[in-house]
Length: 239
Image 1 (cartoon, one colour):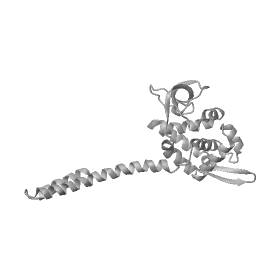
Image 2: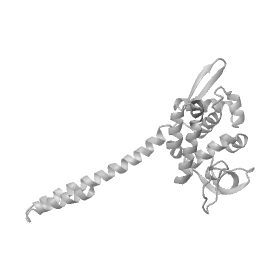
Image 3: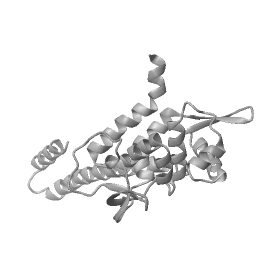
């Protein structure tokens, strides 16, 4: 540690004759540079880890995550048709096809043909890693002015009860919303409409928003709830 290195420096000073100060100074300077390089390498490793985490899924877009959360909400319907996904998510069929293709390339979903339909299955481990560790870097929260909208994050009705501070609740800007709060951009523009149609999707979107822009306690609660949803089928199978 730093204390041991300072002790080494002191010993190095003591072992030289008084007249050989230049050699003592040069050795002390060399050890100081070692300490500085260690600190720089530590800082670099932290920054590199964040860049790596955000860069592992460069092709994934916000609408892709919306589609994946829809599939997670209805994972008992793996053959849900593309046109139904498009209709319920307020997207075009082409957007849904492209979103699932990108998600499949990123390893977040597996698509296998089954007759005239396609079976779309979430890769739970990959999606868990993405939502819990990468989403907040790939899709950083964008806050805006106070507006009327749909509450999200910790303010969503389904979120575990938590003591709220004096700040205004995060909301998706929505003319049909009933809550005034700090505007919080959704993952995709159609998320508020899609959430109104599907309560479970709304719950998942709010959890992801809590991870994206919530405080430490909110992120912790959201992670627990997301893991519960990801493992829902597994737990029922064990029973």
